[in-house]
Image (cartoon, rainbow, N blue to C red; front, top):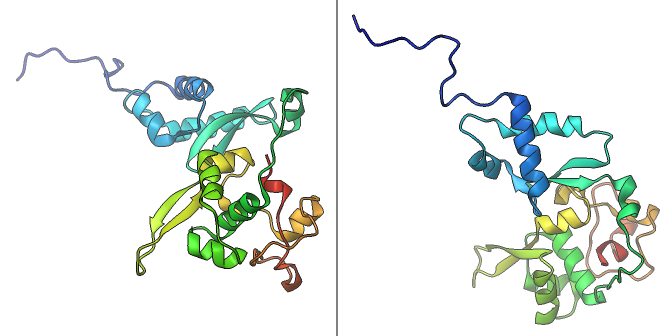
Length: 218
């Protein structure tokens, strides 16, 4: 029989996870201090062994409901953002908004609604060549990025929208992009048709050629 002293049953192991309330505080602190959305995997890496940041996020999200700051999902990551109805308080009269060129708007819209899409497919939809400057501008804005190469001759690279794009427009995923009818109702369409079809399942056939404009202007 071993003479080793027994650890009291109520004595916590060095590897016991902190209480959930403390885990919430940790997640809150990390998200508050981060300028970019944080994934669950990153939270796991930063928090003590045994923590469950996914559960802490669920509690924290509920706790922030109705507050001036919300916990929002951006793709596979999470971030603290000002409540949408209070956004006007953050605006400054000195802010100068710059609009994207027509070519950049069309290219961004095509990528958003048809991703993953190659340069050749973008050009086919638009009916004109896509300049390197247009793509470079969207890449510099970090609104599109390179996706996987197509398993076709030449293995062309594809383009997809980024989490920064989703975050900028308040979208959880690309599936949340508005349909043509929603854009019309919100007054976000002009009278010029956008090349290619961006029809959503809930749109009528005669809406298929309508364009998208101010949604992608910044």
